Figure 1 (tube, rainbow, N blue to C red):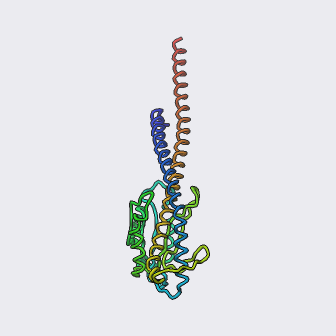
Figure 2 (tube, helix red, strand yellow; figure 1 turned 90 degrees about the vertical axis):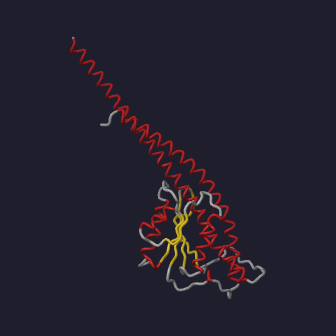
Length: 285
């Protein structure tokens, strides 16, 4: 059995750990609230750009654009969004496991696919397994602006237009609530199934529909990536908040158990000392 000093030392260290996890929980809760607001405020913009793009694309059937054209699939691209750090529960492992299993079931060799990793955990995960990561970005802020991810978004869309790959899928964690985070797969390119959620609107525009779509379609695809990143950030902070809350609860439970063991051991030691004193006094009589 551990000594009283060892038990006391373990209680002290566990209390310090619980203070750290409690602080991290509170920080993640604050970040989650702001990230949730960012994700929700982006929805009206995303809905409107989807409506405009769908109206122009479906109203101009004769328009040709690489982003709207399906072609024989020789290579598939995957964009996966993870975090740069751990301590977020199953947030990273869920999305990485799903993409890994999907790749294993769909492809026979590394020549058939390419991975674009957003987040250090995703980059390291696939590089460790010798999978082709052709583009990666780390250090994305907790509250990212579009300008900070526009470079990788435009490069991703450009690689599809240049036929580096023939279709592109997006894997991220969709934020439903603080306790429900859903791993989501979305076909990003080609935009063959782009549809407006509401009624199609007839627009009068200048110049031609083709020239407008040449500008609008890349922006729409980039916005899909940015929207998924905002969604993922809210999910990451929610997952980290939950993980830190569980860690704090477990630490408090451990402290209670250790305190009980400490008190019992202390009581046993006192009882032993009293017994020895009584025994020694009886021996002197």
